[in-house]
Image (cartoon, rainbow, N blue to C red; front, top):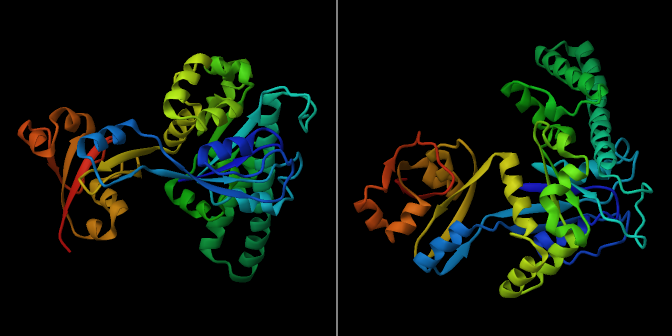
Length: 360
């Protein structure tokens, strides 16, 4: 999974990126031209508890790739090719929105207004997509006059639908497309079609009131739109928590009134937004989390581990992670009739522990 961070300059975007990925990218440069890349480990208490049981030589959490795009000024979405290049490969977008006041760091829009900033950046995504769609429309019209191919005519009809929606200022994530049309559009990597996570970056003094921050900023209604979610965090506080040892971090969070690091909620919300789940493989050599889309069947799920497992799939031994912990071992789970044999049509559930039987 790859998530692209974007937003106005000086919103705390790169501070959040550094905390998520453990990177040390320079912050506070405002309008910098470079893009930052990083990888974050997905926290998963279920996997950690399984590792305590199996004591593996290696523990491997799932990961998320993050792309920290250069800050975008109003009006750049339509003309900025770098803005497109930085984000178009992402599976989802994360818009970091400033909600903190700081006289030493003036907002590029003059005042702090999260709902305005979200609306402005939504327009930037729409303008960027409109530029791509209209260019493609012109090329298709020219090609059809020369060849008259049916496939090009179908594509032109589809792209015109996109243009019409964009001209209504409707992001493409709100437009219903058939499965075939969605496949046709995938190569265009339209930005407004990608799931959107809004992260409201609040002041340190408001870190203990995060659940109320979204409604207080006027973003509650926007966060209920299709393929959109919103969470609040204080990037500076999260940065401080990340630098502390676990006992000190827990004490600091209690002092600040935080039940958990906001970064865990950000990653968890990202998974839900993209419809992702995790299953586990366990053993003395390694305990590992694997990321798949919800409703994935056992055979293609096995392919995320190795293509040979999918090709030679016979059966999957499956047990719920909590049942395995309660039983204490795979043989004990089998004796309790909690370890099942499932075929290739089995739909994998979040938290399943799987052992794949295969023959190549």
